[in-house]
Length: 439
Image (cartoon, rainbow, N blue to C red; front, top):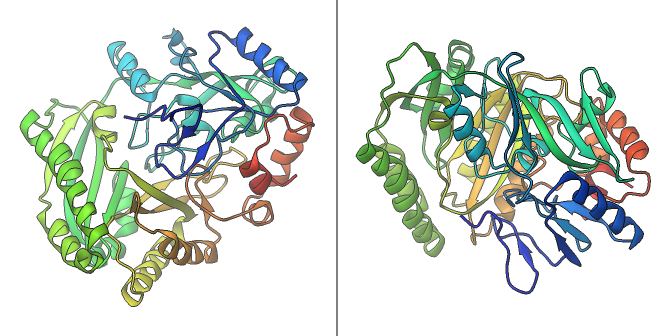
């Protein structure tokens, strides 16, 4: 999967292929003690430190020319507490392994994003989320965190212990320390009934509030150059389980979503003029389907077509206007957009730099096939998002800086003050954090 997308001669490349860096040294600690020692050693040597997960961020949030900490050996479940209904995992554990292990134990996370290649700490530190009426991002499901701070000490935080660190570190951007373990709230394994159904964009926008309130998890994909969308509703079900048959699953998820989709992307990149035609064909080729399965098999799907992505959280009430403006912009521009626009929602949460911090949010994600020029499209989209006080996903392409974030995050100052306290010498600094958090 190219998760740990390392190149030769010590260069590191992210999954999207748009960030490349050569660290001075790479460390793969096998324990929290080894990690703490590596942090202290880096400080002595005057080198910056960054932990890197699976490289699924499109920003240079994990890039460093100092010491790059790889988490491959910090994986696995430390403890499952059936009484408290929590699971504690090492920070380098891929979400995929966590989901499978929990299902074996008859447990599940309440909500998740749509891919599970990322490590638990990489996903939560950047604010990764799915879609949900009441259930929020992965970070909002955290009950406790363990992190190694700049002086090499191990700090545990929760609502009771170090609550001010807990309020910020769940979406910590790697700025407050290196996360070594995460305790998530879990619940007994349940079934989700999924219904995927094409729907005209005008109808989705007209009925958006209703679709969002009537379903536990609602999302839709709009195909630019068309008035078509594909909607997806996931709701809890008493069963029985009715998984997608292997053949249908292969056809929909591998052949259509990855195989044919990849071929269409290659064609669109080579001949942009055919993109609107491809969009019309692919958006009308979808048929409705329903299936019922355990959560991670419904929430997540493989993504084998490489892309670059920008995603903004706008206030939920601004979603319809934002989408109409985005459509008008694409229609009057000469842009050729070959990738659907993804729309999801999340309730307000209480994490300082969560994209849904203190605000019911709707997420709008724009994508371009890897290797296709994306700047013009993303710049025009970003102009629309920021006019609505949008907050960009920390792990996806954006051009915002600390000055902007101080305006759209009421608790921005709280986060930077905590960083001053925990990392006064900026051991965990890199170019990205310098831009988004300031000096």
